[in-house]
Length: 363
Image 1 (cartoon, helix red, strand yellow):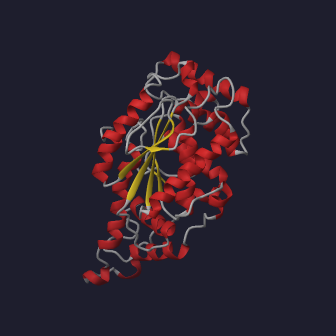
Image 2: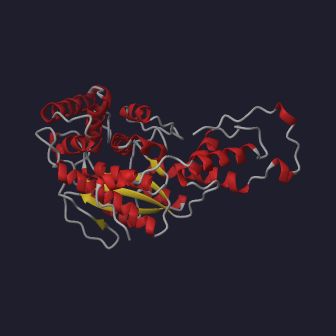
Image 3: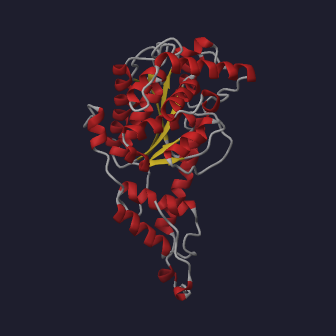
């Protein structure tokens, strides 16, 4: 079993999309019994999956939702509607199969891998992947959330969990997370990387009041002022105002790209990790599939910056990977169209000559 031992090692393995496979997929779609391009985003998705995997008609029987769990020291500033104790309690809920992501993953035929990468509690469970870097981050409103070395360690943990799953035959990954306070860290990451003000990046998270929302924006502003993260150095941003689960997910996304596997990006927190991955290597973004637009106001900024068009709009803001898992049904639909739909030739149907509009499929 190979392991990613450094960030440059991972980045060096990320290749451009396979244009030949994508072109072949587009041609196959245009031969199917439908007007070219008439399945819209499903066709675009099918072509992208071919380009990612290098296989004209891929399928994904084994898929993993990687739920990274960690705590945030900034919770002591009173920025969440839920206490920090909920993080370890929810981890046990994931492990018992009782959370929303478990329910939706069962429906989608996906396994849930729950990783303790920084929960501020001693956790023991036979199904828990225990990779704790530290007992939660420090309060970023008073100084760096973690050290640079800790951020790098968390990123490599995420990468190697992908590696281990890949060795078991997993070829499709979904990002998930749990951590009270992580919308605050994600908002700080967003503001640090693209320069939008905390008033634009901060959202209601677990459902805070207007008063707490204003306070949360001030806390993010304070964190940015006291840490001055360098927008050109993603590890600096991660270590100063990020979270351990965000770092872990950044590693998951980069490692999936290095393994030529699609990675489905869930909501706001996952998209903050996705933007960090893109800042490590812009080419990594072509391996990402945006599942949905979260109700968190900063999410649209992240998706625009990533150049990703989400599949769904469901007004969700739960996290855990729930939106990502719902998008698996659309990925399956795109794969089945490619594998099972008849061509005009095989069905003996006239194409109507050259008058049909050409498809508008593109990566």
